[in-house]
Length: 266
Length: 276
Image (tube, rainbow over the protein chains, first blue to last red):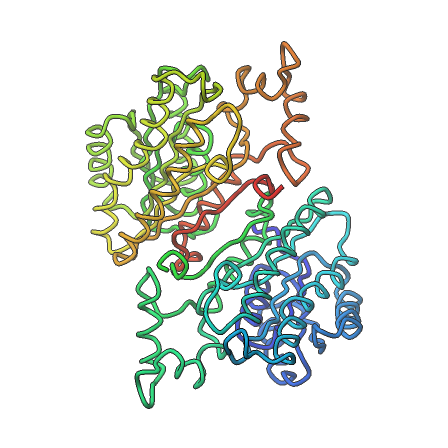
């Protein structure tokens, strides 16, 4: 039904969080997976591969930093060589480094954020696109609610995620004729270690001395329309799979927000 | 087929044909029961051939074939009492309500300065006020149920201006505003509200001499093929129009648990038309 059976998808940032959820959901739909993440995440990346294989699909796990085009190209090529084709690109790898007022961000922090969140996405598209056949395909870039609005102390992150939208809009215009669709997905607060960590929890509850996850949940719920503190990685993966599937065959150039009403509440 | 809406009841306006019928059939394939409403007749100022009772009968047959129960009624969304009573009867028969698709809509055409009072007013009455009436009649049932999803059918004309349809564009933009307010009001009740924005859809609403002629003013009689060629230029993908089922699939996704945390979103199904 989904049209994803026996297709091949490449997912970056595949070791954990949303990336792993994408891999699992695509495997559920019958697709094989090229799962890419940085060498430091090798153990978790193996667990992702195991999850895909448990679902009866093949997984090529390969290590590369998306900022390193040569390494990324080699990783994608290795995957395509083994799995035989490529139909879907999910550029998911991203970092959410410590925040600071725009004028206090260091050169290094700014550059590393753009290298991964923007240049890494461009690299991923370039590395994957050469393997698309003449049967079309689907590209999904993971942006953020910060790709559509700004928040204080996130200029590096917010700029990178906005830029991903510009990249997607351009690509959609360039690739439409070839039947290749390009869309962005904009998660709000997702229950991953990117937000469920001590630093973020303290930022969310500066009023408390030793805030817990539950304290943070309260603060997050207050930001949403729907009465939930966060969405789960699988909710983002469901949106990605919808866009990649035949059910989204004529959706391109779109920004799909999955945020429990975070943007709409603001 | 699948069971993504098993045990759910969906109310759909404009269900006799086109997008509304595709929603009814697609939802039934996924296990839903259907309350199908349609005017099944002409609307003043509209020259597009109207839906008929036979069209609604065909939707009924197709839903049954897909294994769904259906309550179908002839209702004009301009008649608030009729919408309310048909909703209440359908909910009573099928035991509740989980999903609402406000799909009923009309089209007519004239440059803004040449639009008649009646063409303007009828457009707003059906395409905007009719959607509001549908939401108003159904919202209490969704709240009773403890949650649900509303999908309002807007258009690419709800995201950008189009020539010769100012009244249609104003109404379709209005639907987005309605959706945004309603999403805020209903979120505490676990009801999600979203819009879909189709480009041209291969339905009787566009496949007629009137609309074809607007795309090819240079020709006296426009064939489907000549229309297709001109319509392609609107989209990024090399297609002239999408099928009703493509809009229905997007609505199915938004109605399903897969989108349980998606609310207040405007989802184009437009082959890239709004980004071109």
